[in-house]
Image (cartoon, rainbow, N blue to C red; front, side):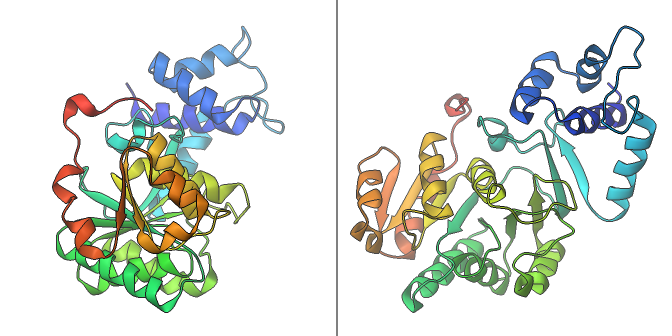
Length: 294
């Protein structure tokens, strides 16, 4: 299989815009070739209109654009590539591609630490203690680069000399929020940035829930520090449970009805502090037989 041709075909298919990305992802995986799916979408002459403004699938042009992205330090990984993250591949919300900037590693022990953009002082302290302790133990700390808890988690992991991954809700050419631009650059240098969006994609209300689904699928567990019902962190806790991943909820969250209900579900653990997370690390990596589609 020609990887460059497959990647160009996948990008061309997605840009066509006439089918949901999830549907295309399923078909591409089932067929095993984006090129074959693309060819079947064209008319008998192979010259069917693929884009509104482009008369046919200019795969050479798309391949050149992909090469340009890579020269900018944005590596494109598709669902057909062996280095697509294993645990993310197993969830229904897996995106057809990821843009990566930084230093990818093999599938490692990854724990997401998430929460509100406006944490209390205690919440910030918990986020730093948990993320810093995880990093010291060789665990990759995953978060969403938002203000508040996310920023505290990324910063603590870096301060501990560990590895952190930011799953962002924009394209890699954007820094959001703007005040985290320097942190975003540091994460790219010492860890990795992940985006499921085109490089120029701006922030949007629909993007961040999609980001949370990817963060959950990419991680083996999610720690929620502080979160209201209408929050991405609460949504990520729900998704993580649907994905069969472990969820850790700070005891202070038990003032919320949603947290009390989640606490009754399998794979949920109520924690009082960092040690309650650290004591469960050995149980987070599933055996091969436990890896199932969700």
